[in-house]
Structure formats: structure tokens, C-alpha cells
Length: 66
Image (cartoon, rainbow, N blue to C red):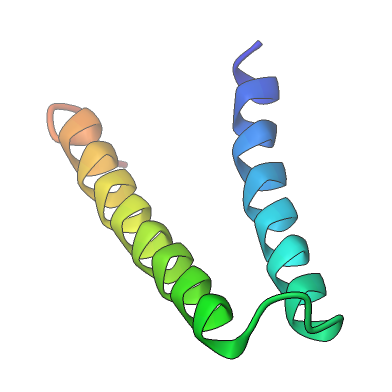
């Protein structure tokens, strides 16, 4: 079950990227909205990456590495 929840995260990111690309390609939104969406997605991805990195460090801090 853990693998499915992990896949949903990646599919969500890919889906958001496709949606933003289609908005830009078909010019359904003005450039300001597209830039705002890209900024929000970029900040969200960066925050998730930093959180994930620190989470993994915290989880593996007590384990021995070989």
C-alpha cells in the first residue's frame, strides 16, 4: 500500500506539470496567471524536497551505515 501512495505523489506532480503546460500551450490563461502557477508549483516542489531530505535524515540518524 505504501507504493501506491508514493506513486500518487509522482502522478500528482506530473499531472500538475501537464496541466500548466497545456494552459500555456493553448494560451487559456494570461501570462501573469501562468507565472503565478509556476511560481507556486516551484516553491511547493522546493519545500517538499527540503522536507523530504530532512525527514530522511531524521529517520536514518539512529541507524548504522555499512
